[in-house]
Image 1 (cartoon, rainbow, N blue to C red):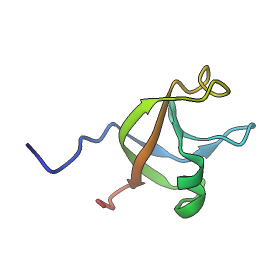
Image 2: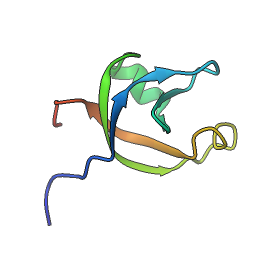
Image 3: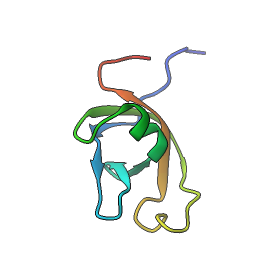
Length: 74
């Protein structure tokens, strides 16, 4: 089994009119973004889950907490 997790998506962190951070079709964990990332940074998403929030599910059915800056393999 490989140590490296598969990369799912690479893109730019954006923020919608409702204050949600997202990258492509994926909702990003709000606390994780505000703790160490900025809008406009390029990230790579490693894993996703089904979005547990009824409020944003229709717009973002998938959510990620497992992402890192592009070219920064942590």
